Length: 508
Image 1 (cartoon, rainbow, N blue to C red):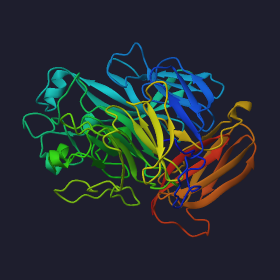
Image 2: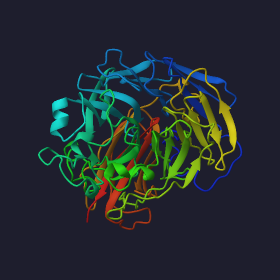
Image 3: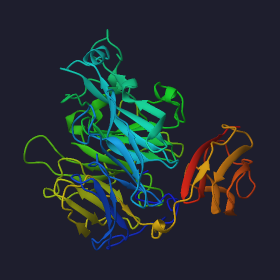
Image 4: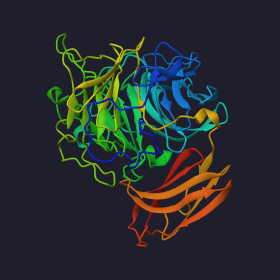
């Protein structure tokens, strides 16, 4: 999930309803689109620290608990162009040293716009994937004048100073449908398949079709969300799949493989509405509200509001409450679009609030929302009733500006410690499973089991331990020695300045 909340605090610290007319204290991270550098500020606009990068950002940087930042930036030798072009990912530590500089950029694919730091230390990226004219026509596309760029998502494990392993990937190309030509691939009835995307929806300009521009991860559900500006929807997919399952229609926690689990914003794309049902007119920054925050589990989005015509444009920020159960399953009525029919909360100040491109929003622990208006170089915080309580005017445009409110003071004084959590074995298991972790120096260690709702089930370790490789057993019982039900659980290790999470499946 977006890192406006430290993984160390994300479970329960700020639970409960909160109302505030004051801005929430913390560091706001600023990545000017015209600068190689990222800096953070306090509420009085004082610069707290600066990280020096080697290229302009694709979007913005994320701050990690060890004081390092992860930033997508421009690969000047890349083969793709357009807004949000990236292709290069850097990790810059708390001492302003680049410790990872990785290219996800070839002739066939290139990272662009957003990334998402994962709880396991990996990085999730969105990328363009190049398809030739011939490939697109064979897949059922009707109107096309050249090649076609389609979204792919990859999870990258950093290796060394410049290397990386692709440990999981998903391709929109594997989840298409069309009803125009029965002689071509992907033929079917669009309205019967909301889990697929109509390859013929919308025009293609400069080869860029759906134009994904944000990505987020939900560790409780093990799902990924991304927004697509040109289809005017956001999409949720299952991350629990293998790469092979993600290319198909079965497997994973959902049983649906890599198909779309949930989508919202423009039901005419899947033929369950028309232009009057379109809600987004350019969408950015779709992401879950983190556990422990007001509105947790709902989805926060930025609607650019670039409507047809010249006099009715205005932006808004929306909170969407999806129809999802505790197991991560989304309901939909046959023949109808996904619910809800409207957002549960909206901020707008029409017509003065309008950012035609980019922009985004993040929820604060006190219920406020931090909003970036890219077009007018304005970052501001509003209460739930829309009152502005803080404003910052950067010297140049900013894509989005996350705020961090956990204490990171002093991280420069000692290097971050390291820890590693292995996948439990066996997995699935019944009734016991081994959990192995390793730390490289003395550290407070917390090893805990949570269910899919984020509720603590069992604490296996909570004590200081020496550098060593440890082997723990979970017997499938909770803190009161009761056997727990079959289902998905998460093993969470907090040690040596880092947090690691693994998904476990108990089958009886």
